[in-house]
Length: 339
Ligand code: UD1
Image (spheres, rainbow, N blue to C red):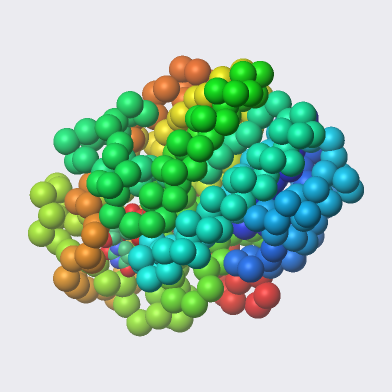
């Protein structure tokens, strides 16, 4: 199948382009390159031996989406990765988040439906779940917009509502909501990985920067949570597993609306993640306990069994695979794509 990946030059999009090409599909990237590098396409070509053409433009602009269809269509499917995703920034700049994260969906759906796409695969988030009483989160866990703590998560849940309404009046269309837990890792070649601008907010890229000596120490945000070792637990998923989840969703897409958790279902603590990274590096990393970070839950992890039953997909890569691949990527690209 032929797929338009909006935000396809970003971290998850690029890994998904690779997985699509390796599964025999065609991938075209639409990306404004605000949070990634145009060099990604050359890396994808080196890994796959195939091309993923890049249309430089914004998924929020109908004209740019139309240009992608005119130059590279028709497409069987759109995958929508093009979003702003920093939780803290979303609290500071809510309008930027609501505008970008909804305008992109609007433009992609307008043009995609007019051009006869059969499926629309949306990057949602495990942060649409909010109540620790629901752990492990199934797709049915109660979700309420007003309970969500930040505009990023709310913008994703708003998208889910919009998409459900659009599907109702387009009964032949498949809309798949993929709720990601914590994507980490890199392609095992070390050619494609996460390239955050500035000091990373998320744990894994932060630890990687400490390991290369670019940051002095890992701060462990709280060790007095009600968890086995007192540190926060998350459901980290290898980005290549996540990418393969998108291929499965594409290949299994039937008319209708479906939501799937993409995670491992295994809670991993901050201390366990750091210990795994230390095994990858071969020595201990400097670290100290800091106060809790505002807004953090003690634990989030999913029940991924629906995706296994219905999509035939299951995450297979371990925590040590994730940290090994991040360390490989970080060593080969200490300054990210642009060096
Ligand atoms: C964050 C986002 C979430 C997004 C996810 C993507 C927040 C509040 N949530 O989730 O919306 O979907 O990333 O992966 O930003 N930690 C440390 N030291 C650090 C950084 C983090 O101890 O330097 C801890 C945190 O307290 C948490 C765990 O590590 O317990 C994971 O944090 P992080 O990687 O930022 O992910 P989330 O907060 O789960």
